Amino acid sequence: MNLKSLFTAALAFAFAANLHADPIKIGYSDWPGYTVLEVAKQKGWFKDAGLDVELVWFDYLPSLDAFSANKIDAVCVVGSDALVTGATGGKSKIIALLDYSEGSDMIVGAPGINSIKDLKGKKIGIEVTLVEHMLLLQALKDNGMKQSDVELVNTPTNDTPQVLGSGKVAAIGAWYPISGQALKAVAGSKPLFTSAEAKGLIYDVLAVNPTSYAKHKEEWSKIAGIYYKCVDYLKDSKTAEDAVKIMAAKVGANAEDYAKNIPGTHFLTLAEAKTAYKKGDGLDSIYGALTIGNKFNMDNKVYKVSQKPENYLVPGVVAGLK
Image 1 (cartoon, rainbow, N blue to C red):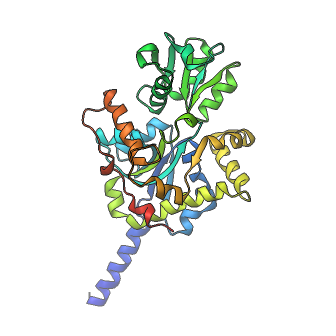
Image 2: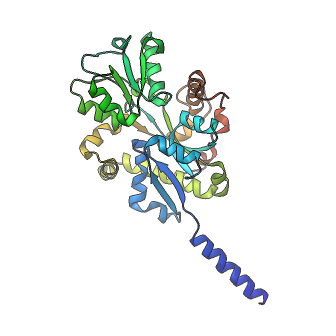
Image 3: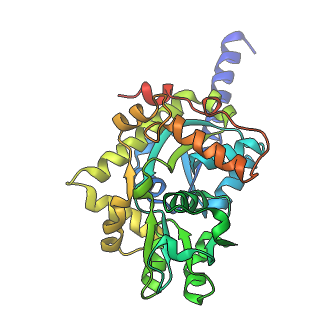
């Protein structure tokens, strides 16, 4: 075989290998800030950008397990939980900030429970060490209470509506749409404290496997850009209704009910994400929020070695988008 034939064969092999390369897999679940990616999937925006992306649907915790087991390349995750997976082996690079919770995360009281202070000495159904636990501690602190003033009943978040309805707990912690399901299922239940009272405490991020990020930097930059395109589509009054229909259908919710709960998630625009990536100690900065999240994880012995936000955050991807 001559040199030209060898070169032609090599090109053909490379083309064939590229055709059969594994897609970039992103795990996502039922939080609105993640489900908005369904818009890109339905509209074909990944393919339009020349990307082979597979969105893989999970319940939240299994998505983190899949990421840690290298079954997916990236995961939509609460920032403080990205620290948890990192501390236990599933390191990541946070290339995009998706949203912060502004009311959709709730401590929901059972009938007859009207305030956080009413929870003193009572049981609370909550998924221990996850984000609602952190929200509960903030609620207790704001009301002059401590965790020792209540009894935590470790409960998978998806099961909290049933547990609240059973009468075995005085309150539960859950995120939307599960928080909404609890309020709808249990007559007389009510929000006692929401993430709107702690804006920036709960940031959601796109966490990418470091090897995948190093190998596909250009692709990940495009993916981040497409996320913000989805946000713009949702926020545009001309296309918002279509976006909500797509998102609601994915989680099996009524579109009108879903639309009413959209304001509980503050979807970050590209400009807002660039601002939140700036270093700071407060909740308006992802650095400040992750520092608080790391302290929560250390205090609750989720991991033993303190995690540094700067080892995870990659502000350059968002900074480079226009």
